[in-house]
Image (cartoon, rainbow, N blue to C red):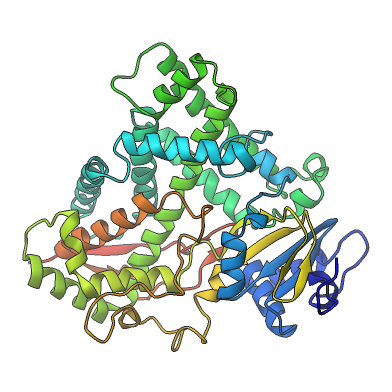
Length: 469
């Protein structure tokens, strides 16, 4: 089990472990001071001069990997394709191993391929999706118009729009506003209550009986209840042929009726759950950070505006034309680098003993990938703590996707929402800046410091959207 260097990942490169707690007490104390477990773990890796940091969360052994080479190994090698079988992840999936995101092996491969093939058949990632984006942006622009320059925050509305676009391809209809807003609020609360390693509840599930609010257990239960209601209601409507047209649920139900072995109603619920959770927060948070950057860097906002008007004037460009906007695309990319949403990509579990950077990671270990550190590594980025869109423009004045930039992760486990998220964000950026100048609401610039839990999200702020003349 030892590597050529006779090192275990958690024997040499780790903070001190204590009985029962592991290093939870150290992480918790340091997180309370700096506000982010991701930041604490990043600092620890530097303190121990390692790109393979060993941690112990109660009885669970966790390894965090840093650096492009190690991140690629974990993202692409089959030894890391499994997911942890933890209490937190089962709780997230209605107490079962269902869906796509947190299953593995043949079930994952078959249903991942099936889901995205049939979503594409319904128009996901194609022109029909871009028409849905246009419709959502029309509603957002009407909302901005009605604000008449008063301070507003669009993040919730954007999250609702994104969720309904994906749900339209999944279930053939939209979720009503009251339901979807409640889900978004609960998901935000869940993100703040937990970390990618699961938090206290994951290490000691019995805490849910003693402190259900403090551990976040009640938040997840409320969220599961709302999500389950939406999903079950939609499945029942499809069973009774009350939804017009074709969609993913109808396609999956056909497989159930044909008695395909792994096609069950529980599995359908799990996939629908994955779609709802994947779409709800990430793009909304990215949009919020993008607006924050426009407010904090008005000179860059003006450069975006000038590029849009120079190329398109007041015309509404098609999605296929937006690649002509070099600086605008660079601005969006820099916003996604500077404010990485998934600082840790989804947790993996090793299927065998495997060596990473000279250290053995035994089978069954939970592995986290630090994308946040990669996006701020001075080895790859000149002045990484500076917001600079030009880093995504090459010497010929063309937009370039930097080789160490992975906002949606890597490999077959990368975020499935990418085909929707990026087109929505660049379309929203162009549509809004073309019509409005965006300013801070009270003369005080909002903070760039994110709130970090499972995901990073902007601190609450509002902005004024002033109609351009």
